[in-house]
Length: 295
Image 1 (cartoon, rainbow, N blue to C red):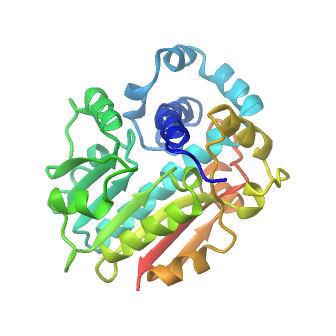
Image 2 (cartoon, rainbow, N blue to C red):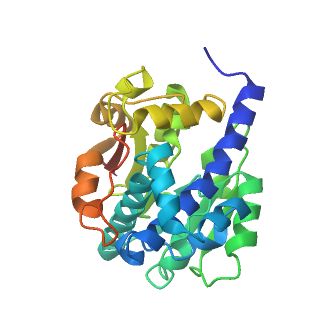
C-alpha cells in the first residue's frame, strides 16, 4: 500500500530524529571502543539529546544495554561511519570537485575533512528543520570553506533544481554522493527516482555510496543478526521501513551506475569491528553498503 502524504510526513519527521541516534552510537562507540579506532566523528558528542547525554556517564553499561536491546546497532553505525570515511578519503586522493550529502542530518564530514575539502564544493541536503538544528549544534566549528546548506521539501521540490540553485555544477565536475541511512525509508519508486536524478547530475567517474536493507529482510526474513530488534525499532517509528534490494547491481545499471563493491556485516566486522580495543562488535545482518561509479 502506498503511503498517504500525512503518513509520509510523519514518518520523515520520525526518521529525521534518527540523526540523534546515529550521533549517539558514534559517541558511544568512541567511548567504549578506542575513540578513533571505532570512528573518527569527535563532533557527534555535540549532537546528543539530553537523555542520550546522560547515558554517557556510564558508557560500558550503556553498551551492554544497547547490545541487548538493539543488537548490531552499535557495530553497524560505527563500521558504516568508517567505511563512508574511507571512501571519501579515497575519492579525495583521486581528485574531487564536489561532495553531496543526501539526507545530511548531523554528518560532520565537512568539518572533519575541512582541510582535505579546500578544493571541493560541499552541499548538505536535508529538510529545513534538520539543517537548522545541524547549524545550531555544529555551526561554531571550523568547516570546509565551500559548505552550502541546501534545504529541500522532499515531497514537493526537485533535488536537481535545489542543487543547481545553490551552485552545483554538472559538466566536468567529479562528484561523490554520500547517501547514508536513507534508502530504506523510501518507497522503491522513490529510490529509483533519486538514482535517476543522481545519474543526470553526474559527470563521468562521479561516485555514489549508500546503504540499504536486503529484500529478504523487507519481506519478513528476521534470521540475520539483530534483524528482529531492527524491525521492532522501525515499527515503533511508524513502520518507516519502505523498501529492500535483492540485486543492487541490477538496481544501479539502468541508471548508468556500475557497482564497484558491496559489503555486508561479515566484511564490516572483519575490517572494522573484530579488533576494537573495547572488544569485538557485531553489525546488523540485514544491511549492506554499495559503492558505485557513474559509467
